[in-house]
Length: 95
Picture 1 (spheres, one colour):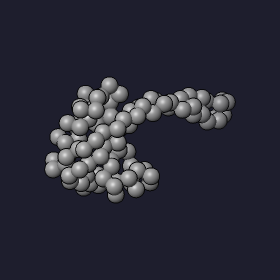
Picture 2 (tube, one colour; picture 1 turned 120 degrees about the horizontal axis):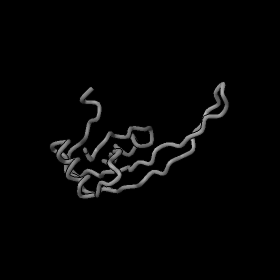
Picture 3 (cartoon, one colour; picture 1 turned 135 degrees about the vertical axis):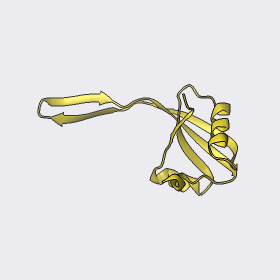
Picture 4 (cartoon, one colour; picture 1 turned 90 degrees about the vertical axis):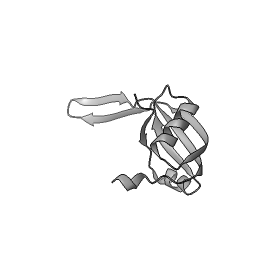
């Protein structure tokens, strides 16, 4: 099981990237030292200064269909905000 699932790229988080902070969706049981090692291993030339984590709660979602209202919830996921002291991460280089 990999620690880093995917980078989270939104308009707000793109502004944080200018300050050297990058956001990833990580495994819910991942610890901060594991996240730091995984980021440094995935992106060579990057040194991580700090890792902040937050567990994002589920939210109710629903839609109206022909058969009535279909309700549900989003999944619970863990977000890691990684502050980089050396190097830079380019998410779009692989595309």
